[in-house]
Image (cartoon, rainbow, N blue to C red; front, top):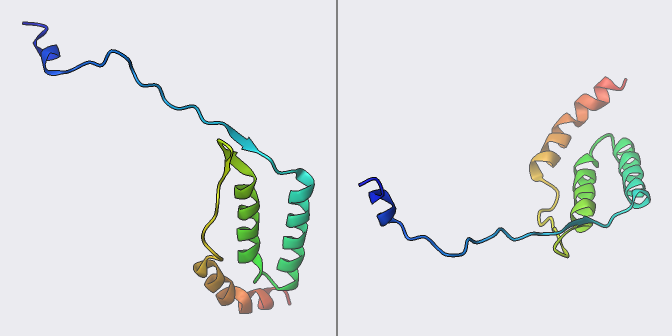
Length: 99
């Protein structure tokens, strides 16, 4: 009577094992530094408007250089519209605060 609950289940002989995936980053510090410095300069020159594009550019670099089983990640979206709207809204306030 104690073993009645096992009669309702079918057990497989061989358990399935999770697939092992290799994660690898192929970027370099020098390459990332060049992207970072350009992003900083353009963000300062444009008073922060370029910030949304800088974030997308950085993400694309990291996604393209991160490989999962030899396949890179990919960012499909362009500049996030909400980030651009926020930057456009904050532009007058940034100009006021820097004076």
